[in-house]
Image (tube, rainbow, N blue to C red; front, side, top):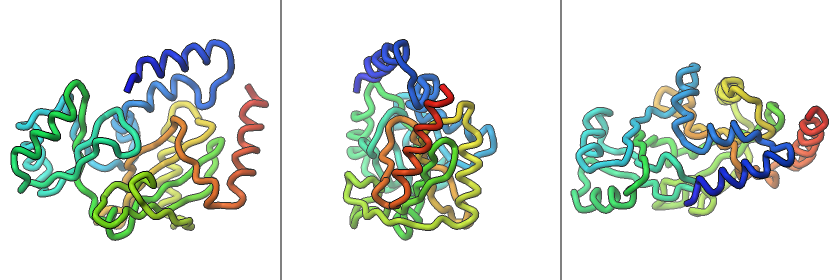
Amino acid sequence: NDISGFLDTLSHIDQQTAMANPLPLVRWNYRKTYLQDLEEKGVKIVPTLWLGEPQLSQIESCFELLALDELVIKPVIGANGEDAYRIFRSDKAERLERIVERFRGRDGMVQPFMPRILSEGEFSLFYFGGEFSHAILKKPAASEFRSQEEHGAEILAVNPEDLLIERGRQAIDSIATEPLYARVDFVRDEQEDFRLMEMELIEPSMYLRMDSAAPQRFAHAIDRWFSRS
């Protein structure tokens, strides 16, 4: 993926018109290292180890550092679950070496595998103009752990519980620049709290079809946003 070309194109557009979400926000969000900034502000994220370009010895040591037998490794720059792998302490070195090869020239990150992804799913909360709009639950397909619709996940409309709303509000309020639109993804942990998995500020799928009032809320947010520009 030519991320530099993408950012250069956005920079060119930004010089000629108003962008939403603003370019500095996009530059901050395209690398998942933004999770570090949010964690420093008190947002509960899924625990993360940052590897640089992953090496086999690093991956093996992650099992020891996190004291777990099951992890997820994914690229720091990526989308749609591409090159995200569920790995096990019992994996043969050959499999891990193939995964390492996929990360040549790219930074990687390792997180605990969150079992509630399979038993419950991943929650996505949507915000327009900083205000909560609607929420969905994404349930991975059989034999899959990735919760994206592109990988066969089932999408359900949900009414989020109070704690999830609170965690979403905390995450949105932690962004330096208010976005026009945002999707905030959470998974429930073993303590029945919610951990931020990702915050999507770059053209996320909005799932407007899951709430009949969401398109109008989004239209009103767009109108307010550009009226004040």
